[in-house]
Length: 308
Image (cartoon, rainbow, N blue to C red; front, side, top):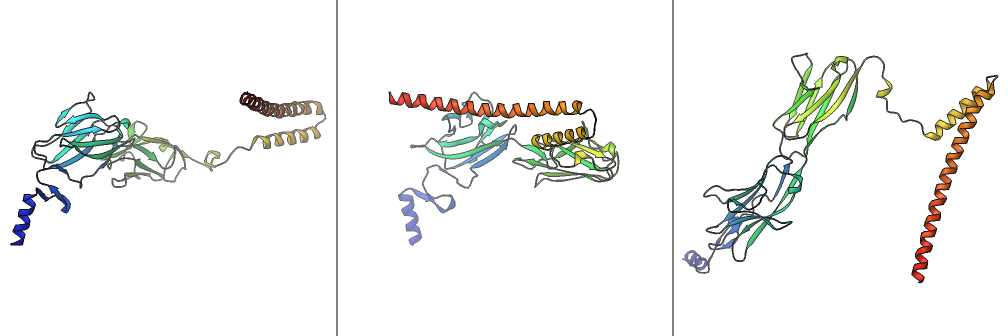
């Protein structure tokens, strides 16, 4: 008996149970908050924002761009001169979808799904458009000894969805597995990663290798397969600082002068070099003094202006 009386109470006062156990006004539209309100899309790919409205009845659903309050769609009709925006809705469905295709970086921002109640109700959605780029972890250049393995790992960074494929190219040609043995590719869509392995590399395996995932910008690496000893290019070294170069030059010049009879021909370049270095130091000192003088004049002018 009390259950029936409670039901009559809710009907009398116009409330009913909505989604998630909350009570909503009878016949009034309300948003289904279980929908995802943040979306990420890659540049050049379609972007979708899904708004689900219950008890819509004869009200209209609109999509508004928050940064300029521009009305993009009302119902299934587009009110923007930008043809990339469109509203998608299936008859009998509670879902109203805003599609942006193709998405561009300028489309990132907040969008509102509005319902024409009195007063209006709205729900905010955030769209982030990213540039999806591939990255080869070995860097732009790789040196490998002949007989070693070429092991390249490619990651499709910022891809909102796993790529449907990742192709490897050598030059302009797809890597040919039938050309020689020892070539294998392992692609993991979940981690957006692909690994190219070329066993027992030979000098003719050198070239420009490119990783090209679907819906992502490609990345390339130049591979050098070198025979013989470890070349200087494979070693990580930095050139000596200029001051050390000068010391080495002066020391070798003095040593050469002490072991030759015609010292004038050896010492003359040394004197010129020392003079040139001295002039460099003088130039730096003059520049520093000039900067301090300008600053002093500037502050003096400001002080005089304030006194006036």
